[in-house]
Image (cartoon, rainbow, N blue to C red; front, top):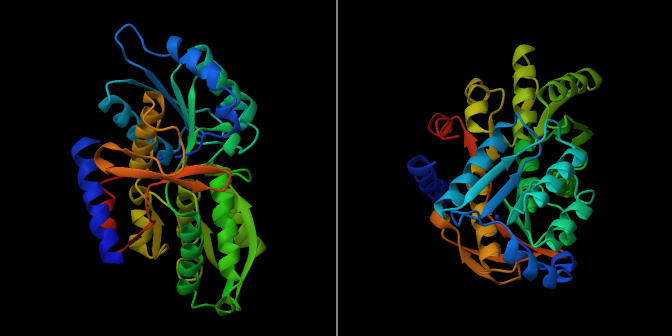
Length: 358
């Protein structure tokens, strides 16, 4: 399996070097079908015939988000359209709502959003859909009534279970562990954490104890202080899982500065370019992720497909996502989603190669 994943991602890497995600027709989009048709005629295309595709990430200063937006922009420009990249200073729903309202006024054709809250964005996103704007979420989902589709980076169950399996192996199957998450409202983080807890129910983890879930809000300084608080509150802590690129890098720095690489092990989801030094030093024996460029790239093609009418977001629909090939829309609770692929393991054996990619 590892060999297959490595070959697949090597191919993805090659594409990224040469050049630079799903859903449903739910109540929100279904009840506004007439309005959508009318608005589609007046929305978007500028004098040059380009349509406008906007992406809103969680907040600025996040390298993962920057790479995701890079991939989105690449996809939209491959189709000859205009990409609008936006992110608020702080990772709040209120800030994203303001941006959604601005984009509605600009009559964009599509909004793709990594939600800071699964439900608080619903009124604004529903308003956008009623104005004829196609809405999809990526990375961190909004609720099914707020979108036409969701693009998921990897199977949430696989992510959560894999992270527990990894940290347990690192600490020898015994000891206290903690989770350093992003915001408490982030749907992707919360889903992964639920699967981590389910994995911990297995009797083989009887000697592994989850003592705390802390939240660094995807802000570096807060993630640093939360890591320091964990170490102070739990002096016997043996492992930290940080399923956030900002959090894992912050925790890596704290553990390095305090000389704790042999006492506390770190794993999670991180950018190879940011985590290489911690993997090479042994602070983080290994971690996981996917290519955020590809997450954005897939989301861009999903948005293009929705606007062009090639897909509606229904289960079973298929479309071609540029260099990523054919993708299928699958069920996701009350909605649907498009899955990018499996999480990939980065360790001392491959980090030198991948840190040059993203």
